[in-house]
Image 1 (cartoon, rainbow, N blue to C red):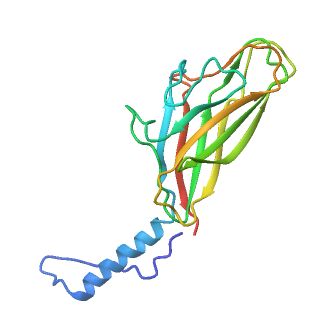
Image 2 (cartoon, rainbow, N blue to C red):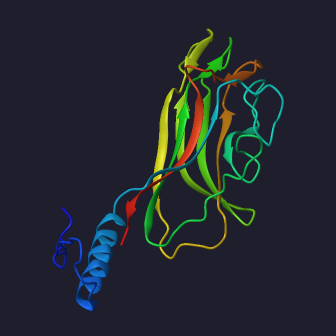
Image 3 (cartoon, helix red, strand yellow):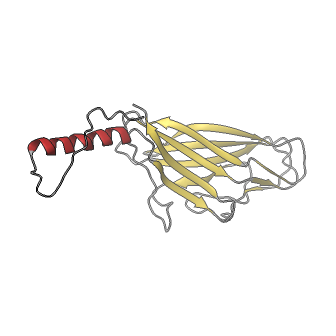
Length: 205
C-alpha cells in the first residue's frame, strides 16, 4: 500500500489566497502520488495479433506450409503494426517487462511422429538477437493428424538501466526429430488469435 507520509489535503474556497506554502504542498502531493503510482504496472504497451493464418511470408512472418526450418510466427518491429505501424519498444530504466505469446495451436497432418517444436521468445536490439525464453512442445508417438502446443508462453525481464534504442520482439518456432515429410501450420482465427505482446508489469527498483 502506498505510504503518503507527506501527503496533506488542501482546502480551497472562493477567495482563498494562493500562497507559497499552499503551492509547495500541491507540488509535494503530486510528487507523492507520482512516486507511489510509478511503481505499479502500466499494462500492455504494444500488441500484435493475427486472426488469419499467413500463407505467404509477410514482414518475416509465416504460419502455414512449415517444415523443419526456423520460422518467425509473430513479430513486433517497425513494420508490424496495423497498416505497417511501428511496434518497437524503447524500455524505461528499472522496469519489469513481460513478453507473451498466445499460441492457439500447432496443426499437424499425418506423420510428424516424435517431433519436438522449440518456441523461442526473442529480443532484438540493433540487429542482435537475444533469446529471452525457450519452450519445448512434444509430439506424442503417434502418426495421426492432431493439434498441439496451445497456451500462453511468457517471460519477465528487467530493463535495468533502460535504453534509448528501440527494441524489437519476436516469437520463432522450429521443428526437429519428425518422421515423414508433411508440413504443419500455426492456427490463427477470429476466435483464437495468435498474439504477441509486451507489458510493463511494474518497477524493478
